[in-house]
Amino acid sequence: MRESLRQGRAVVIACLALALGLPAVPALASPAGPIVQAWPPDAIPGSYLVTLKTGPSPAAEARSLAAEYGGQVTRTYDAALRGFAGRMTEAQARRLAADPAVASVEPDGLAHATETQNDPTWGLDRVDQKDLPLDKKYDYANKGDGATVYVLDTGTDYRQSEFGGRASSGYDFVDNDSDASDCHGHGTHVAGTVGSTTYGVAKGVKIVAVRVLGCNSSAPWSTVVSGIDWVTKNAKKPAVLTMSIGGGATSTVDQAVQGAVRAGITVTVAAGNEGQDACNVSPARTPEAVTVAASDIQDKRSIFNSSQSSNYGTCTDLFGPGSNITSTRNGGGTQQMSGTSMATPHVAGAAALYLTANPSATPEQVTKVLLDNATPGKISDPKGSPNKLLYTGFLGGGTPSCAGGTSTDDVAVPDAGEAVGSTVTIGSCDAKGTSGTSVAVAIKHPYTGDLKIDLVTPSGKVVNLKQAGGESTVDLSKTYTVDTSGENRSGDWKLRVQDVYRFDTGVLDSFGLTF
Image (tube, rainbow, N blue to C red; front, side, top):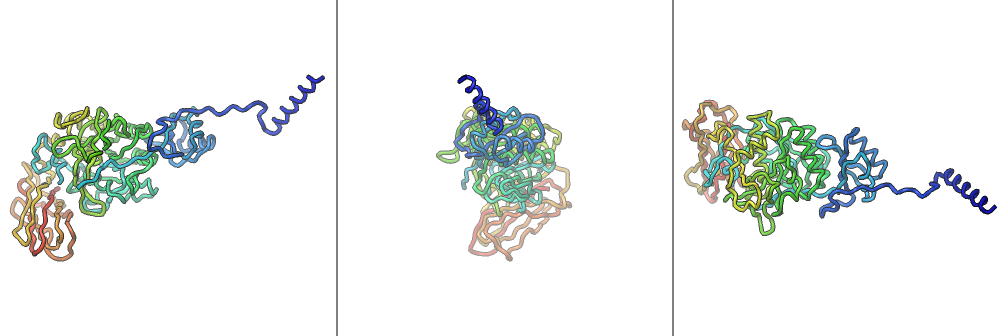
């Protein structure tokens, strides 16, 4: 009788449990999956990067998974990779990682610019020749005007005259708007080395700013992946994506870079400035990207200060000029910066030059050409890196170019003295000038109203660029447009500068000519 009562009571309890929607037996906990790279030092608490396997729309799948496991979707990716970023607890992330639709879950971390600021431009002078000493000129076979370089960075001061109307805003993933203006300066400097009229490797390239780093030059990796994803979807080819960005190793970022390369975009990335093996750094460790270490004016691996030097090792591909590089300043003028951030845009510009001449080249072909033609055996202390230094002279045979040239000789401008000058020599070239020739001038002077500036053509014709007097600024960095269509390009083109008033002296920093 007692056994019968006990059984009856059990049946009643089970029925009540079912009626109340309660489990009649103890519930099983949801399975947990692994968190990749758990936990890096720069991890952002509660923020995760999720990579999905094949399936429906990543946006729809992200919403469905968030509804099932909890959390909030903050960004979705559907071009460079399939996935999303989200806010969630560690427990929610581990349950999500076990879902069969999920390829990986890893903590979001901080990406940062890879420059070290210091206090001319010798980098351009170095990459067009095999050996030292520098010859004080930069020859180039074309201007890169057939390619577009997307600069993932702190934004770019894309309206300034050094870019000649060739720079534009892509998207700002920090403020989530269409104005990718710079509020730090790093991105403007990088863009200037890629393609400014005076300081750029590719002086006619189109530049698109994609802002993924904040005013403090850092941001979550999830923001950076959004930028890579946007470029992968929107790039006008032939295209180069340059990333002077680094941080802890993250497989999601590496996969995004790989996705961009698969989409036909050549990607250049900075090796980093921690003085460590670049294989520990993303995106530097990504094999599909061109990973750039930094060298100095003496062809040594760059040492920036007592605690920072160029990363190195088998994950790097080549060296580029990276110490004390002069380029464009946010808001106008120039500044010097050092870092693998400065070396990387030299390579991006070289890629643009090659793509202009070979617009159907694949990223693999671009990489191979740049590495095969790099100058071997020049870098001292490479620390296990491939001992190759960027060389652009093979483009067009390395002969003096019809496209123009740059002189970086520092010429003292005396106080109220005789005119001084700098010369760009164009070698054997049968072509005439153009109606829109660009003449880029950079002068350091405390009162530029004192200066008269002329261009003297090979035939001796004098073209006045600036009269003395009128509005004055501290220093001058300006590009003038001149009609040279009546002149032969071959010969010596001279910039003549005269200080016509007393009390100030200056220095002619550089003079560039682009037909």
